[in-house]
Length: 446
View (cartoon, rainbow, N blue to C red):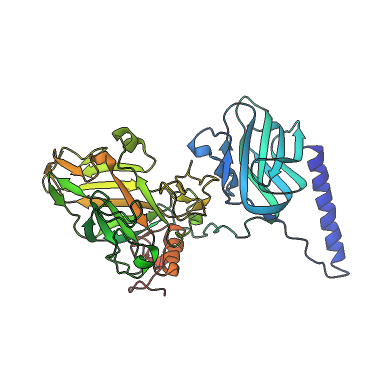
């Protein structure tokens, strides 16, 4: 243990004795709040050893996970506190691969840095440093490794006041085994139109043919207001969101999905309890109509590609499917939002996929991860099958959020995603009936 840490421990013990003694004479006033500002906040690093060792693992409050860097000097890891903060203390819990020499720094903008603490000859373990400074960003900047490996932090706590001012959703305390964190939106076909109100707003007929589910009024002129004033084909009547994707053809025959299509709302991050509902009016495009087969196969949203019968992981529409089966396609959306823009010029940049199970600092807000699972009743010879956008690997889809009561969406996210359940459209997990449902049989709040 370092001399400073021994002194800190003695000082803490003395302080406790003083407080105990004082209680016999007078009421003790509480000390100024010492809040952990970094828990669950967006983080980034100069490198990571792999997907399981991303920067966010050092700010999740879990000593069984860790950030680990590349095996080189220098390296850094930083956290975005969400807003300017006054920083009073930092606690670094090192794994066996620790820093011998490093600095703790703060910054107002993530570009210019001020030293809060310089450490030379560190000995690992847990370093607790009292500091004094301000900033929105705090980082550990390692200059000399103590081992031949990289830098590895189990936890990096930043204490003080200020920051984002809101507490991330806490980890749930239930004891059920968590295998899922999702609920379904089941929505049926409403129309086939050559429209795209996100990519070609106000331009009817400008797009290739799309198949629409969900909101019954969706067309080229749709806006957030018009969708909220419309109706829906979804089981949950509060879900007036618009969902659409390129139409499926067998030769020149349009093949329409039959019945409810499954759109999952899931967690895309490891800390599923931190997922927040979509903001009203958020919209984005997933995938690309110009994608190559390799781009589709390696896309971060790829799940199983196309499926039929016992066939899966086909990165184009299969040439043949067992008669009586159907063609399914599953694809996942990015689930990290930049927290500012409801749309962007390319309809994608305001969203990002998690990195190693954590949202990047550029897109710090974790929202539900959509997974479209669409079924087309087509089988037999599919050599002439195609999408309106081209080959199967041009699969993509659009989402325009329009839940008419934000409390309903919040209840489903809280109960099912944050609660670690596998829910139906009203938030009921058939396999865990003791947990109840988020909504009544009429899809209203209890």
